[in-house]
Image 1: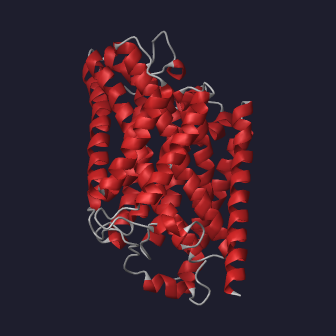
Image 2 (image 1 turned 120 degrees about the vertical axis):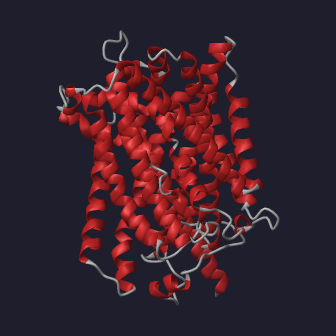
Image 3 (image 1 turned 60 degrees about the vertical axis):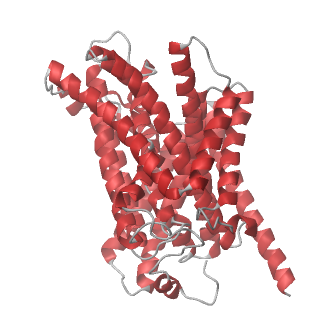
Length: 468
């Protein structure tokens, strides 16, 4: 979806540097860029909330499901990293698609990616509410009201995202490092106290129903989505054509290893316990008690809540930059293009992003929906947005490389394989729908995309009328 006068090759050659859009150039180093992707995934929360859900379907095959999810994620990561070596833009996957394919695909990628970040941010805001209630009940025997908690989470995240992208990245880095570190300490103490045990049942996939692996794969993919969000920092990362591709792949690999380690350890740790892993609201808390370090279990619950907040911050940062890029592409009003001269951040887009996240969660809270259900429902919606953007980027990659004279049959083959895997995951998701609320989600997503395409058509018709 270039301007109609430039070829895709000219677009990529002109973007060998970065598209700044008023953002502060080169303020983020490699570690801070990686922190954006890690925080958008919120890996420590998956160990508490997502892994038990995957176990309910996959049982002893939980670690294997995460291995499959890692393979699917690395396919996407390959396509994204190749594009990230060609150009750097805050529009990330939207820009990659729009600069290569006809406008229909670019617009679809834009709205899909925007929904993905907004729904993920709202999902983990619900997760933050869940942990706030859990901890307050544990220590104060009191449940805080949902709306003030959600408003505070979204407002603080918006303020930090607006204040300074470097401050935001460094804060996300430390919050995630502490949270993940606490989880790893518990797992290490378990090994020290009980010895390194080989769980033969898990390696043999004993009792695993292979028909359940598909639905379990869909759940596990939500643990990975957001791993590519470092690409939204294309205007602010130092040496972006090198650091961003590395961050995308590194994030996928590190997270995959972490998820497999946690799933294997949690399944093993719950052997002989009266409660099942799938029924636990805080599995690592129980494992910490089993290891004789109960206070660390409380710290992990607190860290998981903090990790959720870091993810809200990361999604606010990413969604705002996608909004800004969409405004530059005439998909949204021009007011969203504005950036602060002092802070180098898209203030209007940040406010809109945080407000939409708050509106979604507040609307559900007023209907009596719990934080854990917000995490589940909105996360399921976000997956459709990510899978759509991932598939479109995979479709676009061979065309972009051919335009630049870099055609490769291997790249084309991997791109086709990536698209097929994304389609299979969607099919698994549709087939695994277990209740009325989840059954509505695909239709909500399709209606949203249709509305986005209709909005684009109206704006285009209006602008053409003015031009005449």
